[in-house]
Length: 64
Image (cartoon, rainbow, N blue to C red; front, side, top):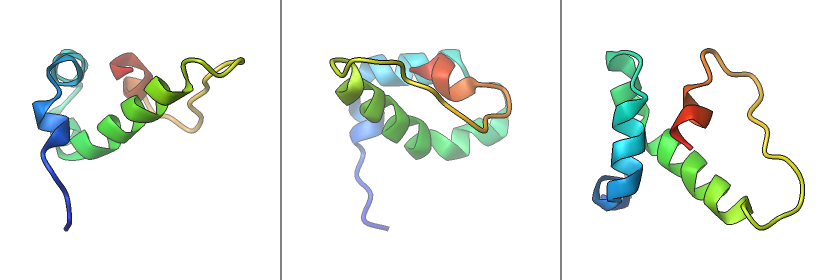
């Protein structure tokens, strides 16, 4: 799978992710949430808005 544990070692991310879990299935997509958080972090200094489209309950942006 070529994955590492960087998401699980990032304490601020783990807290944000844990605070926004909606149900048990959210635990299975920790990598998606981590990639979203990293993308948002790198886009903070780019002018404009950051938009998440096609979401169900908006948990991704709550985590970010």
